[in-house]
Length: 171
Image 1 (cartoon, rainbow, N blue to C red):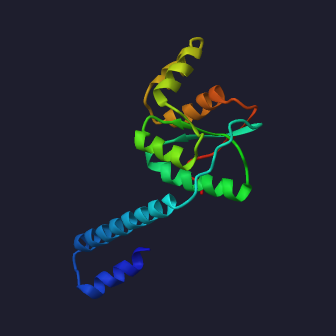
Image 2 (tube, rainbow, N blue to C red; image 1 turned 180 degrees about the vertical axis):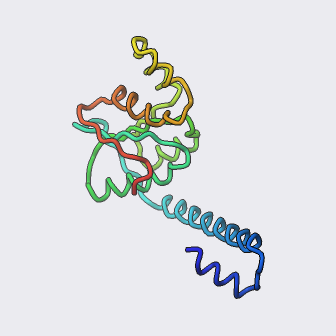
Image 3 (cartoon, rainbow, N blue to C red; image 1 turned 60 degrees about the horizontal axis):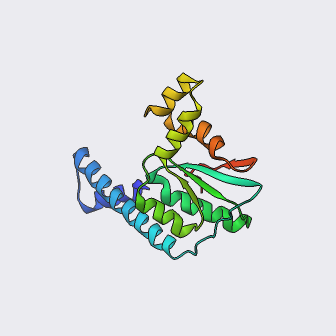
């Protein structure tokens, strides 16, 4: 990816200092990534929404963060398109989802269930009174917060016997 940019930079101007070259490569790479993100967002807005099933023998759960919303939408739309599944989608907010993120999810998946982080924490912690270590960890913002939400909240909020857990960054 960076090799053609590096050649172009060397053809454009002979740069002897690596810091100038690195700065140039970084700035070009950032512009390319932003353009790519904008293009993906534009194309995503042209896709049709998928009506989410209310009941099924299985449901798909995902713990989702703000930065992975677009990846999640692309991945789930791909899964639903190719599998022809009609299945409930349940998203567990990791605490970083914005109102705009939730609106976007509802626009692409009418009927999706988004479980608010504060609500889920209160609900799950009430059931953890006999397990003080788990309760403490679930309340604490830490590196393993994501894993704890997966282990505790997904099962707690599941309404079907069968649960499919889908990471948000799988396409």
